[in-house]
Length: 270
Image (cartoon, rainbow, N blue to C red):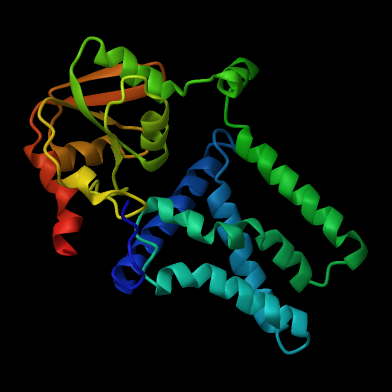
Protein backbone atom coordinates (compact mmCIF):
# COMPACT_ATOMS: atom_id res chain seq x y z
CA UNK A 1 0.00 0.00 0.00
CA UNK A 2 1.19 3.48 -0.86
CA UNK A 3 -0.01 6.51 1.09
CA UNK A 4 1.42 9.82 -0.12
CA UNK A 5 3.77 11.43 2.41
CA UNK A 6 2.94 14.91 3.63
CA UNK A 7 4.82 17.60 1.72
CA UNK A 8 5.63 15.35 -1.24
CA UNK A 9 2.73 16.88 -3.17
CA UNK A 10 3.14 20.64 -3.56
CA UNK A 11 0.79 23.09 -1.83
CA UNK A 12 0.12 24.65 -5.23
CA UNK A 13 -1.37 21.39 -6.44
CA UNK A 14 -3.52 21.13 -3.31
CA UNK A 15 -4.76 24.70 -3.76
CA UNK A 16 -5.56 24.03 -7.41
CA UNK A 17 -7.54 20.92 -6.44
CA UNK A 18 -9.45 22.79 -3.71
CA UNK A 19 -10.33 25.54 -6.21
CA UNK A 20 -11.49 22.99 -8.76
CA UNK A 21 -13.63 21.17 -6.20
CA UNK A 22 -15.22 24.37 -4.88
CA UNK A 23 -16.09 25.53 -8.39
CA UNK A 24 -17.64 22.13 -9.13
CA UNK A 25 -19.63 22.02 -5.88
CA UNK A 26 -21.06 25.51 -6.29
CA UNK A 27 -21.81 24.88 -9.98
CA UNK A 28 -23.81 21.81 -8.91
CA UNK A 29 -25.62 23.99 -6.34
CA UNK A 30 -26.42 26.57 -9.01
CA UNK A 31 -27.83 23.90 -11.31
CA UNK A 32 -29.90 22.52 -8.41
CA UNK A 33 -31.36 25.97 -7.66
CA UNK A 34 -32.19 26.64 -11.33
CA UNK A 35 -33.88 23.24 -11.58
CA UNK A 36 -36.36 24.26 -8.88
CA UNK A 37 -34.58 22.33 -6.09
CA UNK A 38 -35.03 19.04 -7.92
CA UNK A 39 -32.50 16.23 -8.03
CA UNK A 40 -29.57 15.56 -5.73
CA UNK A 41 -29.15 18.13 -2.95
CA UNK A 42 -25.66 19.76 -3.11
CA UNK A 43 -24.66 18.89 0.47
CA UNK A 44 -20.92 19.77 0.03
CA UNK A 45 -21.71 23.29 -1.23
CA UNK A 46 -24.18 23.89 1.61
CA UNK A 47 -21.73 22.73 4.29
CA UNK A 48 -18.82 24.71 2.78
CA UNK A 49 -20.98 27.85 2.81
CA UNK A 50 -22.00 27.24 6.43
CA UNK A 51 -18.34 26.69 7.39
CA UNK A 52 -17.23 29.94 5.73
CA UNK A 53 -19.96 31.92 7.50
CA UNK A 54 -19.20 30.19 10.83
CA UNK A 55 -15.47 30.97 10.58
CA UNK A 56 -16.27 34.60 9.74
CA UNK A 57 -18.55 34.96 12.80
CA UNK A 58 -15.95 33.22 14.99
CA UNK A 59 -13.21 35.56 13.79
CA UNK A 60 -15.35 38.61 14.63
CA UNK A 61 -16.01 37.28 18.17
CA UNK A 62 -12.56 35.81 18.76
CA UNK A 63 -11.60 38.41 21.42
CA UNK A 64 -14.87 38.13 23.35
CA UNK A 65 -14.71 34.45 24.27
CA UNK A 66 -11.92 31.95 24.87
CA UNK A 67 -14.14 29.07 23.76
CA UNK A 68 -14.87 30.85 20.45
CA UNK A 69 -11.14 31.43 19.91
CA UNK A 70 -10.44 27.75 20.58
CA UNK A 71 -13.18 26.61 18.17
CA UNK A 72 -12.00 29.02 15.48
CA UNK A 73 -8.43 27.72 15.54
CA UNK A 74 -9.59 24.10 15.81
CA UNK A 75 -11.81 24.36 12.74
CA UNK A 76 -9.19 26.38 10.86
CA UNK A 77 -6.64 23.61 11.48
CA UNK A 78 -9.11 20.88 10.47
CA UNK A 79 -9.94 22.80 7.31
CA UNK A 80 -6.52 23.97 6.13
CA UNK A 81 -4.14 21.25 7.41
CA UNK A 82 -4.79 18.88 4.46
CA UNK A 83 -4.04 21.72 2.03
CA UNK A 84 -0.88 22.99 3.76
CA UNK A 85 0.55 19.46 4.14
CA UNK A 86 -0.12 18.63 0.49
CA UNK A 87 -2.62 15.88 1.30
CA UNK A 88 -5.53 17.38 -0.65
CA UNK A 89 -4.66 15.95 -4.06
CA UNK A 90 -7.85 14.79 -5.74
CA UNK A 91 -11.65 14.74 -5.63
CA UNK A 92 -11.75 12.19 -2.83
CA UNK A 93 -9.55 14.26 -0.50
CA UNK A 94 -12.67 16.13 0.64
CA UNK A 95 -13.00 13.45 3.32
CA UNK A 96 -9.93 14.91 5.05
CA UNK A 97 -11.91 18.07 5.86
CA UNK A 98 -15.21 16.28 6.46
CA UNK A 99 -15.05 16.67 10.30
CA UNK A 100 -14.96 20.45 9.91
CA UNK A 101 -17.77 20.39 7.33
CA UNK A 102 -20.04 18.07 9.31
CA UNK A 103 -19.59 20.10 12.52
CA UNK A 104 -19.83 23.48 10.77
CA UNK A 105 -23.51 24.02 11.81
CA UNK A 106 -22.45 23.53 15.46
CA UNK A 107 -19.70 26.14 15.08
CA UNK A 108 -22.16 28.58 13.50
CA UNK A 109 -24.68 28.14 16.32
CA UNK A 110 -21.93 28.59 18.91
CA UNK A 111 -20.45 31.67 17.23
CA UNK A 112 -23.84 33.38 16.93
CA UNK A 113 -24.54 32.89 20.67
CA UNK A 114 -27.43 30.51 20.13
CA UNK A 115 -29.16 29.72 23.47
CA UNK A 116 -27.06 27.05 25.17
CA UNK A 117 -30.04 25.17 26.57
CA UNK A 118 -31.20 24.20 23.10
CA UNK A 119 -27.79 24.13 21.38
CA UNK A 120 -27.24 20.36 21.64
CA UNK A 121 -30.78 19.50 20.56
CA UNK A 122 -30.68 21.93 17.65
CA UNK A 123 -27.33 20.57 16.47
CA UNK A 124 -28.66 17.01 16.60
CA UNK A 125 -31.78 17.98 14.63
CA UNK A 126 -29.62 19.74 12.02
CA UNK A 127 -27.46 16.63 11.68
CA UNK A 128 -30.52 14.39 11.18
CA UNK A 129 -31.94 16.84 8.64
CA UNK A 130 -28.73 16.88 6.59
CA UNK A 131 -28.52 13.09 6.77
CA UNK A 132 -32.12 12.76 5.56
CA UNK A 133 -31.58 15.19 2.68
CA UNK A 134 -28.37 13.43 1.66
CA UNK A 135 -30.10 10.06 1.52
CA UNK A 136 -33.07 11.38 -0.43
CA UNK A 137 -31.55 10.94 -3.87
CA UNK A 138 -33.80 8.25 -5.32
CA UNK A 139 -36.92 9.31 -7.28
CA UNK A 140 -39.02 6.53 -5.77
CA UNK A 141 -39.27 4.33 -2.69
CA UNK A 142 -38.71 1.10 -4.63
CA UNK A 143 -35.19 2.14 -5.69
CA UNK A 144 -34.37 3.19 -2.12
CA UNK A 145 -35.30 -0.20 -0.69
CA UNK A 146 -33.49 -1.92 -3.55
CA UNK A 147 -30.26 -0.11 -2.66
CA UNK A 148 -30.79 -0.67 1.07
CA UNK A 149 -31.11 -4.47 0.88
CA UNK A 150 -28.81 -5.19 -2.06
CA UNK A 151 -26.03 -7.47 -0.80
CA UNK A 152 -23.76 -7.02 -3.84
CA UNK A 153 -23.28 -3.50 -5.22
CA UNK A 154 -24.59 -2.85 -8.71
CA UNK A 155 -21.12 -2.02 -10.05
CA UNK A 156 -19.73 -5.41 -8.99
CA UNK A 157 -22.72 -7.22 -10.49
CA UNK A 158 -22.22 -5.41 -13.79
CA UNK A 159 -18.52 -6.29 -13.96
CA UNK A 160 -19.20 -9.95 -13.24
CA UNK A 161 -21.97 -10.13 -15.87
CA UNK A 162 -19.91 -8.38 -18.56
CA UNK A 163 -16.80 -10.47 -17.86
CA UNK A 164 -18.75 -13.61 -18.77
CA UNK A 165 -19.00 -12.33 -22.36
CA UNK A 166 -15.94 -10.07 -22.63
CA UNK A 167 -12.46 -10.75 -21.27
CA UNK A 168 -11.83 -7.71 -19.08
CA UNK A 169 -8.30 -7.23 -17.75
CA UNK A 170 -8.87 -3.99 -15.81
CA UNK A 171 -11.68 -1.78 -14.51
CA UNK A 172 -11.14 1.99 -14.12
CA UNK A 173 -13.55 4.16 -12.14
CA UNK A 174 -13.86 6.71 -9.36
CA UNK A 175 -12.63 5.87 -5.87
CA UNK A 176 -15.76 4.42 -4.27
CA UNK A 177 -16.85 2.48 -7.37
CA UNK A 178 -13.41 0.88 -7.63
CA UNK A 179 -13.45 0.02 -3.94
CA UNK A 180 -16.85 -1.70 -4.17
CA UNK A 181 -15.83 -3.68 -7.25
CA UNK A 182 -12.56 -4.76 -5.65
CA UNK A 183 -14.35 -5.99 -2.52
CA UNK A 184 -17.53 -7.52 -3.96
CA UNK A 185 -16.68 -8.77 -7.48
CA UNK A 186 -16.74 -12.55 -7.59
CA UNK A 187 -14.51 -12.60 -10.71
CA UNK A 188 -11.72 -10.73 -8.85
CA UNK A 189 -11.01 -8.46 -11.81
CA UNK A 190 -8.44 -5.74 -10.97
CA UNK A 191 -10.19 -2.44 -10.26
CA UNK A 192 -8.36 0.86 -9.75
CA UNK A 193 -9.47 4.44 -9.19
CA UNK A 194 -8.19 7.52 -10.99
CA UNK A 195 -8.00 11.19 -10.03
CA UNK A 196 -11.04 13.23 -10.99
CA UNK A 197 -10.31 15.71 -13.78
CA UNK A 198 -6.89 14.42 -14.87
CA UNK A 199 -7.97 10.73 -14.94
CA UNK A 200 -4.37 9.89 -14.01
CA UNK A 201 -3.25 7.41 -11.40
CA UNK A 202 -4.23 8.51 -7.90
CA UNK A 203 -1.93 8.94 -4.89
CA UNK A 204 -4.87 8.44 -2.52
CA UNK A 205 -4.50 5.20 -0.49
CA UNK A 206 -3.31 3.08 -3.36
CA UNK A 207 -0.62 0.66 -4.44
CA UNK A 208 1.56 2.31 -7.08
CA UNK A 209 2.11 -1.08 -8.73
CA UNK A 210 -1.56 -1.08 -9.78
CA UNK A 211 -0.81 1.84 -12.09
CA UNK A 212 2.62 0.77 -13.37
CA UNK A 213 1.53 -2.66 -14.60
CA UNK A 214 0.52 -3.51 -18.17
CA UNK A 215 -3.01 -4.77 -18.73
CA UNK A 216 -3.36 -6.63 -22.03
CA UNK A 217 -6.97 -7.14 -23.04
CA UNK A 218 -10.13 -5.06 -22.72
CA UNK A 219 -10.20 -2.13 -20.29
CA UNK A 220 -13.62 -1.20 -18.83
CA UNK A 221 -14.09 2.42 -17.73
CA UNK A 222 -17.09 3.40 -15.59
CA UNK A 223 -18.13 6.90 -16.68
CA UNK A 224 -20.03 7.69 -13.47
CA UNK A 225 -18.17 10.41 -11.58
CA UNK A 226 -15.50 10.87 -14.25
CA UNK A 227 -17.32 12.84 -17.01
CA UNK A 228 -17.77 11.15 -20.40
CA UNK A 229 -16.31 14.05 -22.40
CA UNK A 230 -13.18 14.13 -20.22
CA UNK A 231 -12.69 10.37 -20.57
CA UNK A 232 -12.71 10.61 -24.36
CA UNK A 233 -10.33 13.59 -24.32
CA UNK A 234 -7.70 11.75 -22.27
CA UNK A 235 -8.22 8.06 -23.06
CA UNK A 236 -9.43 8.49 -26.64
CA UNK A 237 -12.55 7.23 -28.39
CA UNK A 238 -13.77 3.95 -26.85
CA UNK A 239 -13.86 0.85 -29.01
CA UNK A 240 -17.27 0.06 -27.58
CA UNK A 241 -19.68 0.85 -24.79
CA UNK A 242 -22.57 -0.69 -22.89
CA UNK A 243 -25.28 0.26 -20.43
CA UNK A 244 -25.66 -1.82 -17.28
CA UNK A 245 -28.79 -0.65 -15.48
CA UNK A 246 -28.04 3.01 -14.57
CA UNK A 247 -24.30 2.68 -15.28
CA UNK A 248 -22.54 3.51 -18.55
CA UNK A 249 -19.31 1.68 -19.32
CA UNK A 250 -16.71 2.38 -22.03
CA UNK A 251 -14.47 -0.36 -23.46
CA UNK A 252 -10.90 0.18 -24.69
CA UNK A 253 -8.85 -2.43 -26.54
CA UNK A 254 -5.68 -0.29 -26.71
CA UNK A 255 -4.03 0.24 -23.33
CA UNK A 256 -1.25 2.61 -24.45
CA UNK A 257 -2.95 6.00 -23.89
CA UNK A 258 -4.60 4.82 -20.69
CA UNK A 259 -1.32 3.39 -19.43
CA UNK A 260 0.47 6.71 -20.00
CA UNK A 261 -2.16 8.56 -17.96
CA UNK A 262 -2.10 6.01 -15.13
CA UNK A 263 1.69 6.10 -14.77
CA UNK A 264 2.20 9.84 -15.16
CA UNK A 265 1.92 10.94 -11.46
CA UNK A 266 4.20 8.15 -10.24
CA UNK A 267 6.88 8.89 -12.81
CA UNK A 268 6.88 12.51 -11.55
CA UNK A 269 7.43 11.53 -7.91
CA UNK A 270 9.90 8.68 -8.23
